[in-house]
Image 1: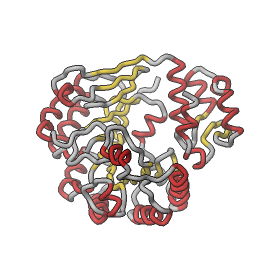
Image 2: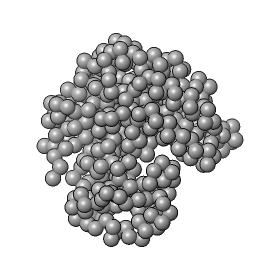
Image 3: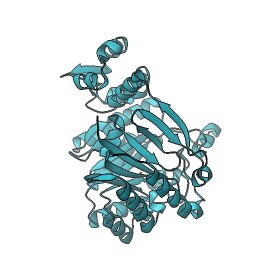
Length: 371
């Protein structure tokens, strides 16, 4: 039995709600922040486990809306309630406008050792469309401030799919690589239900890249970053050697994780559960867990197989069969035969994996057939 667990802490507050964002976050509820932190600490203390914490991930929303004292109180609750591995990865998502030197020094003093910075673009015109509060110069400054403060595990996010040309994408990636960060996540823009972008898209005020252009951009991104020394280790993620995200990899590898806060999801001992999306209900301890399901063996196998296929190295057949007491090639014979013939999936050296960036482009269509 695996004795490891990975913790996620959701901070649902934002300075401004981005027009493309469908995550559970609140733009004008910062007055609730102190009450939320109190409730968050209560939830952390209520959860009991003997598993050793391997990572703590502050996500959002915008975690950098928190003051250093808030972050410290949450971390104190974690360290007093759980056994935390001395080499645990502690990630903090942040908005470039927040990353002043004093704030970064505060994060560093708390033991945070990995920063994820929401750069999104180095094109000011694109940042304006995306509704971001920063411009490209603030993005550069935020990363430089982090490096000057001693952070040596930095990830930046980039978004594409807003009618960029290959030349535009080369500009984005050249700037990203010039910063010499350890990790780059690249996300394809999608029109999410309930967002301002959905409204603008439906009215024709917003256009985005078509499927063919987006696929070509994806292939260009993969080739460019690999040639720049980044390993394409997951569909949307690239890292220099040894700097793959331990926390996110835990999701894809099927390890136990526990989410705290509004809308947080968890998977512990074969049980999947999710917290309420309502900030008021969460703070008032009403309808705290709104979904819970004990996965049966076939559910676990299917989910684990699909998540592992997102990884560059895919599924190690012998290990997977032993872990889940199954025969994956027999279970998925028809699907594997189909996608091997289409050159989308390959088996080699005891592994089953998506066959290159071309297959990753259409990964959703491929992976859905295994579910």
